[in-house]
Image (cartoon, rainbow, N blue to C red; front, side, top):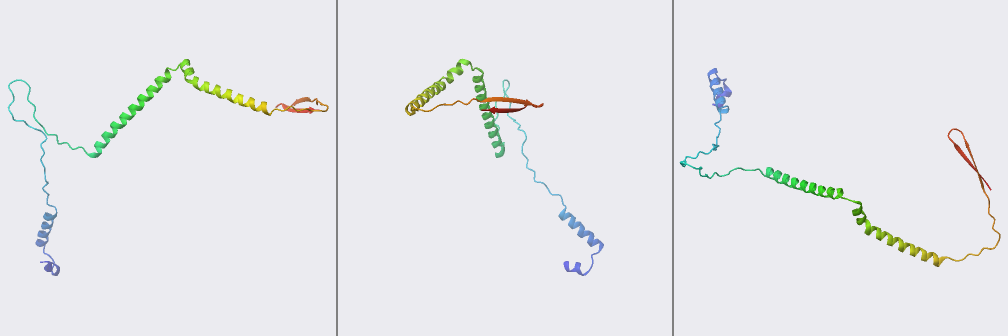
Length: 167
């Protein structure tokens, strides 16, 4: 039949039949596969005449994606961490709010004692060095003291000062 189409043109009836075949073959509606899942449960067991209805087992078939579980666990961890940091900050600030002069002095007393001991030891070592190295110097001759006079002159609006030193 393919060889006939090539050699002679199709008639209108043949073209119409071929077009109908192509449309039906390519554009026929697909029958979707519908899976029916029950969305509710109907219990047909008889109800008791009085009192509560006995419980009926209903299987839990929820599926939680792995990423949702990870986000849930991470948010619980972040919340617990932030709560711990907040409690620690609250404790520190409560301790700072109750600081008194006596507590500050008692807290710094050991450091002040160490500083005082270090100063005393350093002073003793310094005195021992100067006492050992000090020698008596004897000078012979006359000593002349130079007398100096200082004269200040202030000029102009911005107080330019000139100092003259005379010997």
